Structure formats: structure tokens, C-alpha cells
Image (tube, rainbow, N blue to C red; front, side):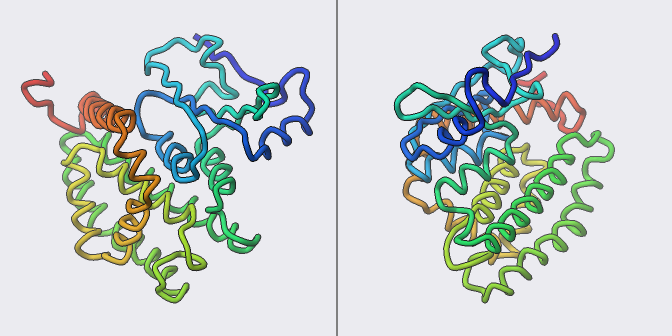
Length: 267
């Protein structure tokens, strides 16, 4: 079925109207994404961290693309934004754009234009690391171990060294830029969570290597995880439900691709 495409410029609203909603300090938010963490995880973390009022709409992974699932390009997530008076609505699409909008909204995109571009660059690079890891989940069984070994022995040390270099360039104060948490630390922590939600065949050697050989990088994750509002969100029944669904989803996706052998319960 062809996707029901959603136009960015809402009929009856001008660009100025959309801007007004996006800049409304009392706006409310709805994240429309599947019943898993994945590409919606960082956005949900940012909403929780910022204390922004939000709710989740979670269509089933096999839902038809009806009016309720309309989007600009036939994919999710979509962040819906409603003005405080409830009279105007707009939305933001594409996970990377949603994350960066929310980061700016909650003060995690730096204090000036230079810091902002550094944070955006780090975000983009860490997102690439995430995608590189994700390819392991779809490796055929006969190539799986070789790909994991190559990732852990070659790509991972080189990439971690790059992150350590930038931490050092900022004075080894525990942050990538400035002296407080930013989206860069958030996406790193979120990415390592994402790694941990994959089957252990892929996730365990990667996470163990980072903790053992790159403790400075791992420390960034612990700082983000310690944020009180984030801890409240991650202790919620809603988050735990999403996390459980995510682990099941990735295991069965990997089995289907031939990257993980099913257990007796999964046959």
C-alpha cells in the first residue's frame, strides 16, 4: 500500500504559524513511533530529560499506512507539537531532525553557534557508528563471527580513539564541548543502549571492549544514565514495555536475516 503522505505546510496555517507553535514554551508533544525504542529512543529520552509534557502513540509494526499513520516520506517517527491553547498544531519528521529540535528546546545544543555545530557534527558521527554496528545484526551465520571480530578489533578502537581525542581536546573535563551535558553525550549513551538491546552475540563483545579499553567514553554513558528525570522515565512501566519489545523485535529480525540461530522456543 502506498504511504499516505503528509505535507509540511498545513492547510490554513502559514509558515509563521508553524514557527509560533514550535517556539511555544508551553506546547505539548506527541511522539508517533512504533512500540519499540529504536529510532524513537533518543527523542523520548530528551522529552523526559527536559520535563516536557508528552505522550506516545505507538502503531503496530504491521499497521497499514492509514490517515493515522500519515507522514512526509512514509516512515516514522513523527513529533507532533500542539500549542498551549490547543488551536494550532505542527509536526517534525525524521529522527535526526526530531532529536536536534528537542535538544535545542531543552538546552542541549550548546550556548552559541560554534558549540551547536560541534554538537551536531558529533551527533552525526555517533549516529554513523550506530548504523555501522547495526549491520552486524544482519550478517549471515557463516559470516557473523568474522564480522564481529573485525568490528571489535579494527573499527571500534579507531572510532573510540576519535571520541577520546575530542574529549581530550576539550580538556578531558568529561564532556565533548563546554562543561555540561549536550546532545552529543545523549546520543552516545543512547547508542550504547541501542547496542545493548541487540542479541548478545553482537552486543556483548562490543560493550565489553568499550568498558575495558575505553573507560572515559563509557563514563559519558554513566553520566547521562544518572540524570534524575531520565531515571524516572526509564523506571516507568511504559519504558520497560518498549525496551522488552525492542529486544524481542531485534532478535527475531536478526533470526529472519540469518544472523542469529533461533533457540528451541523461537523455532
